[in-house]
Amino acid sequence: MKLLLSCVCDRAVQRSDGRLFVEGQYNDLYAPGFPAKHELTLVTIVEWDRADHGRFTFKVQLLDPDGNPSLEGTGYTEVADADPSGPAPRTYYIEPLTDVVFPKAGTYTFRIQVKGTWHEGPILYLWETDEEPGEGTPVSS
Image (tube, rainbow, N blue to C red; front, side, top):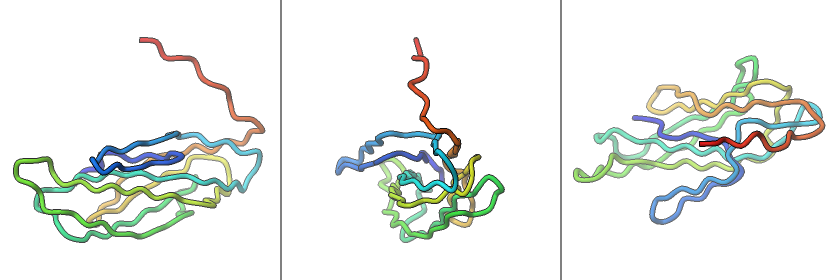
């Protein structure tokens, strides 16, 4: 089992053809003070082992800067039998989270438990400031 993608964004939609559209992916959040409240969407794509099929339970935690869980959730996913001539089975977890409270500035880390193993997910950096910074320097090729 592999974690193919894990990110935080404003919104994500999976189309019927399997394509995933992620809007507004980010790793930094800015707040004028703490505790701060924010809405976000957690996106995770899991590629399963070919032998995996059926229902699997997973856990999601958001760890605060001290390593303590500040948000926890449990869900499940259904894994279809693998097509021998196609790719390994994949499942998409798209979870809009409202009113997520960040008690203080610092580094917050999502982690996801699947099949009894914890995997590091996306990292959010919370900054205390009155203004969001402007656009960064363009990357040239």
